Amino acid sequence: MIPDFLVTHSGGFHADELLSSVILTRLFPQARLVRSRSPEWITPKGDRIIYDVGGSYDFAAGIFDHHQRGAPLRDDGQPYSSFGLIWKHYGREYLAALGLAPADIEAIHASFDEGFVLPIDLADNGVLSPAMAGPLASLTLPALLETLKPVFDESDPEADDRAFHRALAVAATFVEARIAQSAAKLRAEGLVYRAITAAGEGRVLELPIGMPFRSAIVKAGADHLLFVVHPREKDWCITGIRRSEEGFELRADLPAAWAGLTNGALEAVCGVEGASFCHNGRFIAAARTREAVLAMAALAVDEVLAGR
Figure 1 (tube, rainbow, N blue to C red):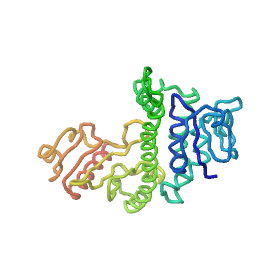
Figure 2 (cartoon, one colour; figure 1 turned 90 degrees about the vertical axis):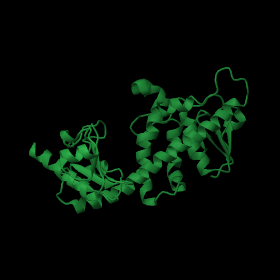
Figure 3 (spheres, one colour; figure 1 turned 135 degrees about the horizontal axis):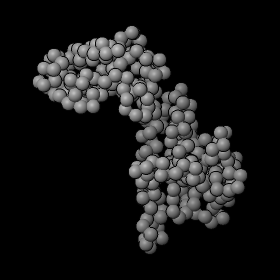
Figure 4 (cartoon, helix red, strand yellow; figure 1 turned 135 degrees about the vertical axis):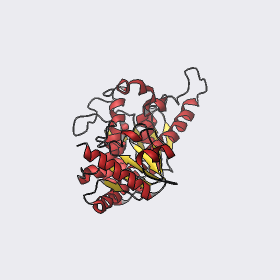
């Protein structure tokens, strides 16, 4: 069905129908977005998709609400919001519309669902409390989108709709950027796998440019790797490999003697001409040439192995 109308509720807005609108307006740019609770609009017809309102979930009828008794649940029993329902049925088409490689669509659809859509679903249904984010609770995406609502004493009757469309543009930016990052991560994996093969049993992975590398290293089972080097715009860097996705503990730190040093002071300590910087946290350092950064990497590896 190609709808003439995309219908969601009027009044205050939340992340779930905003993000649903991101997907649907991209897929059906010719459709008019209507915000209403009027029965004439929220009753299923062949010319519309209705979401986050209407008291029913029926893909064939084009209605995607989750507030009613017997609301839809995922296979694992977790609740959907309207965003989860729209993503389930239209997410793959949306990814294709963004121009993603067909071979990547299923993987990105699943990862975006788990990492982006599901948290919105759980928060909207009260299963996931924003308080779990601690001091960052007011900076989560749902909270930030809601700050774009009109203030309580705004008297203009069009203010809600204007605010919704402003928030929609912001929400679209985040969705598209997150998906672009996911697609880039898949592209990076192929480059990292080739670099791992080239490195053999070496402890240093050399990449042609900076890119996401940790997940590919883990998937490849390359547990022997300790450091990654790659060129930047004007120099080269060496960085550690985090032990886990969360946290900052590394498989190996750069030498303690390098911490916080730059240029001549760093050259004097490490003995490598061209060494230019080492972060005080010892997770990244830089050099002016490839030869210099590889020499630093060799020294760092030697120190780690000597200490084992």
